[in-house]
Figure 1: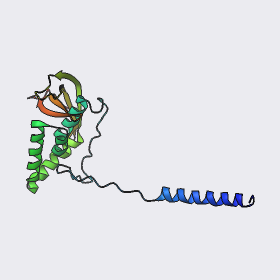
Figure 2: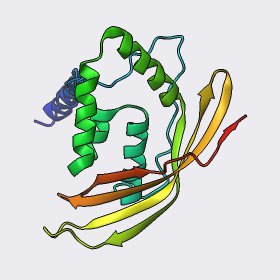
Figure 3: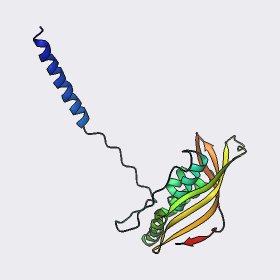
Length: 195
């Protein structure tokens, strides 16, 4: 019996090794591709690359973080993505824009695509965001107002352009997540600077 023990251990070790190799080399299930959004930009290789957003300005999921993300999507013409972060009138407005997007003729769509390329190449940051509590709605929904300055920096006609505009957003807390219910940008830009 003792002579068989090392042989049995060797067979078990080999079987364990083969099982581990088969498990580790087994093809993993491929996640289904995210459906393409209606407002997604079809970029050609020689066109402006998209800017890389800084996502760490505010605590994830906070009213200020949701406001910044919503503004980035809206200002880049990604109405379907913005609709996911919105409710009430703002959601309805985003969905109307998505509907209009689907009805553009090819020439209009190309014009919007060109504007999107410029907007996507710009960095958008919500600066000096101040969040204040508002009275709850009649239905008891918690509300917050976020005020701040949206700073945009991006390339236009071979130059870098910088712009700042005041923003005010009212958010509702729905199903544990903040959603933009109202958005009021300042009527005029605080100043455009070319570098």
